[in-house]
Image (cartoon, rainbow, N blue to C red; front, side, top):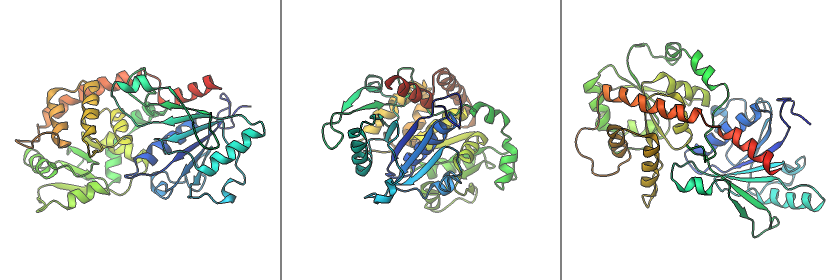
Length: 372
């Protein structure tokens, strides 16, 4: 049986389970994955405990307007009628070790007791450039308790090297970028100084934010800061006193494709978390990543591993340290636009290395095909 979405691929049902922990990065990754799998001929049910952000992140998703993707509200506990029309899919993905809904596990056990096949069960892990990721990618883990005891999960690690699961990348991404009109997009956002440099700000609360914005304004008074809503906007609003020379343009919540456009339209992108890091790489513009901070500073090693893979020049590495609060805060932060422009060569080279590798959806489909 082939898929009505893509007649050249077998029609498999994928159940993707996602719990929103914080900051919406998990839902961002899971929605992109769901939509990309569907575009490649797969049928996806996305079980998510906080589906409301999809109203602005992926308009039409909750209404069932995205072909081959169905969003299901993952309540705890799941009401009985939520599974009335559900047969376990051939593939299960638990995002970031969230564990599938126990009611789904019980239904799967019943399905298997009647002779139904077990799904290919994948634990989709967090993104990291650390060396151990290659060793753990595609390893099995035996389920030792509950109604599904004895089944195996498979660890699947996104990553930056050929020995990992790759990154999310839509097949039409390059064509969309080539057709993108940055000036038209900026005009649609209410920006009128189209020749001014633009900086996208999507961050947590970096300690050097105010110093950076002041130094940029001194260096380039026409520079425009395109500030995303949420924690970035709150961090900017908390600056006291706000320098009137700093040109701030507050953005509305952007659907995922519009967020891509933001990164394509700017000469420097500040991103955070996981999903936006990947999108910044594909944008091919200079970027600075604020990694999610961990209380034991484990994120320091993770950042260093990424900068090593990126082959970041000393100036970009130093900036990342300042932006992420690693080491003492001293001296000037802003390196100047010429230095930032030089970072672009590093980003472009990294992007080319990744384009030569299979993307995450492609690898997942291949892995499932092998296991079945």
